[in-house]
Amino acid sequence: DYAGLDAAERNACIGCGSSGVARFYIVPRIFFSHLPQTCKSYNCHDVVMLCPACRAKAEPPQLARVAELLAQHGGMRAGGSHANAAAVSIEHEAAQRAALGLLALRKQTSGRRKGRLPPERAAEFHNMVAA
Image 1 (cartoon, helix red, strand yellow):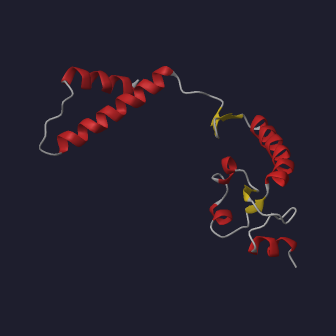
Image 2 (cartoon, rainbow, N blue to C red; image 1 turned 90 degrees about the horizontal axis):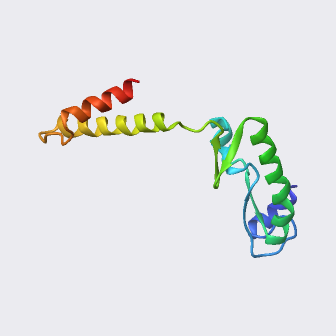
């Protein structure tokens, strides 16, 4: 028998049985998206219900482990998610914006509307993307 099943059926805390619970993810959300599809394609009991007191006990060790894993593998926290340690350079970001501008121009000119991007600017964007 699974001790938490009765508590889960009652929407009670699986730690102490009290009410006033919230979801607690066993696998932190920042790692869940990187799991193989087989791990995400079924209800894997990744979510448990915890009251604020039990969450206060469970969360600090989880956050410490997350920080340890991110540091071990070259990741870092960025707000509520994670980001790679290598930031995008200003030149790379400008090239991305130029590519988006060229894609928007292609979309505009594929119909009957003329593109609003001057040919000189389009050529400049092509050079930025090619570099």
